[in-house]
Image: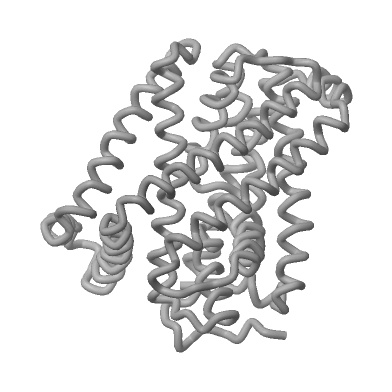
Length: 341
């Protein structure tokens, strides 16, 4: 398992380096540097504050999802979220989601089997929110240049498919699991099939639980939309900081499309994919190549700074070892290493 994980990280790193090289070849690096040098620090610091507030909103949402399993103080959930975000940024193989479960178990004795479905549901609301914003942007007339316009169509299809999944998870759980079991490829082998079906069942169970509380469903979606708009506002501040005022609909749609690209496995620190996908999307929305690339690099640098400082501080505040937090996730709770210093 460790060897396959190492191979995956190596492949992701090579992909990131290839994307970074392609990005550096396609853009004028001197123009990018000139754009970044124009940044006004008042707006940059405002963007940092906005980024931190978005994580707090998501912690409120996770607390609502987690409520049937355990009542955890909001501050602890925020600290756990920041620490796990740092883990996922450094080792982007969805290790942050597993880290949330590990940290929550060590801090509040909540079993990983119980917490991981809540993490999956919580993250699913992020995807649902950005897909809805992409669809809203398309309805408002936002268009991508060239063949990339097909991305908006694909985003709409994914949104409909995801919405259908949520509806079936809430009102037809048994039927959905039966279909999933029949469609799961046999060549995966019994062990992998059971593991994947177990993950899917946990996700479906999470949505089923939320479906019994319609008011919570509306609140969760509202918090998700708020968090996405807050993060998009961070991008907007950075554009303003370099003297560019873009229509809010373009910034929100661009940010939403950018978030969807994180479904593609990235290198540690998302080096390469951040620059390549972000620059491509905002350039296709009419921002201009140097402007788009400069703002994306600035966003990447700020994101790394925020996660490094806040995530590291969160691990210290929670009393967890940084080295232990970055250990590979394990398949069973019995094999989990202690994280407390």
